[in-house]
Structures are given as structure tokens and as C-alpha cells.
Length: 215
Image: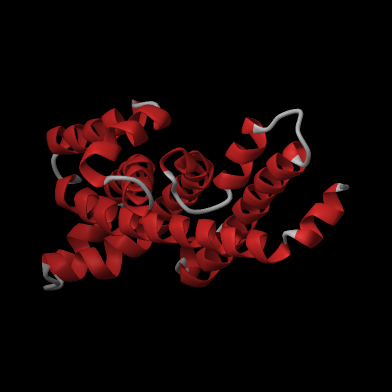
């Protein structure tokens, strides 16, 4: 069976697994965005706390993905729960780090001027600091998404959803019928999803970045 015949024959399954993979990555990056930005806001004013937060996120990032997924089987079992947890942990580092870098890079004279005209700290954060830091934060989100997209394929090791099942099944059957087709279908599907997500983030960046600080 040729590759194109394989795609046509397994179309419904591949569409379903592609949707699963995209949904898993979107949910994990969204969770990491909320947690990471909140952590970055909480620690960015203290160099010691910022170092501690990025270091803690970095520790999880250095654990090999297969080892982390294996460790999560005992408390969370197989399937979606360990997959989403692992991907969220891996996505945290670039988001936390870029949030801290973005917020600390805001011109302090702007912040002081805003405080001088009576704006509260919360108002300064929401109306000045976060909008100015957003391009840097969004870059972290883009990096986190690409990481989650790739690690998501390995989630098939713990029966996670997505295109990783195609890759793992193909590699397990190397030399057999359709083994190469399965591996290629999963790999190319993930590559195309990564490009699609990144293109969406480019559009989001253009729509949400203040006009005055666009490139």
C-alpha cells in the first residue's frame, strides 16, 4: 500500500488522532500560560524569587520525557492525565522565563510615571507592564507549543491521545506492512500541526501586540 493509499484508507482515524493531538497541546499550553504568567507576575520584582521560579521549572524540563511519563503512571495511571501533566510541566519553563524577562524589561520610567499620575499597582500591571511584555511572553508560548507538540508524540508511551500512536505503532512494526506509512503519517501530521499553530500565534501576535511596539 502506498503512503497516499494509506492516508485515504485511514482518513477518519488520522483526522481523529490529529484532533486529539491538537486539543491536548492547546489545553496543556493554555494551562501552562495561566500558571506561568501568574508565577512570573508573582516573582518578577524579586531577583531571588525569579531565579527560584525559573530554576524549579527548569528542573522539570531536564527530566527525560519517557522517565517523567513513566513516573507519572503510578499516581495518575495511563491515558490523558499523565500526558497532560507532563506536557504542562515541560511547557512551563519558556513561559515563566519569558514572563519574567518581559516584565523586568519594561522601562521603569514608564512605570514610575504611571504610578505618579495615581494608577494603582494592578492598573500599571494590566495596562502598561503586561501589554509591553506581551511580545516576549508570546515568544515563550510559541516555544512551549513546539515543545509540547513534539513531547506529545511520546505520550503514546502511556497510552496518551494523539498522533504518537501512529509513530509508536509504526516503529514497533518496522519491516512489516504499513510500518513506514504509519510512522510517516504521525510524523508529518505533527509537523503540519506545529506549523499551523505557529502561524496562528503569528496572527495572534499581530492582533494583540500594541501598535507602537510592533516590529
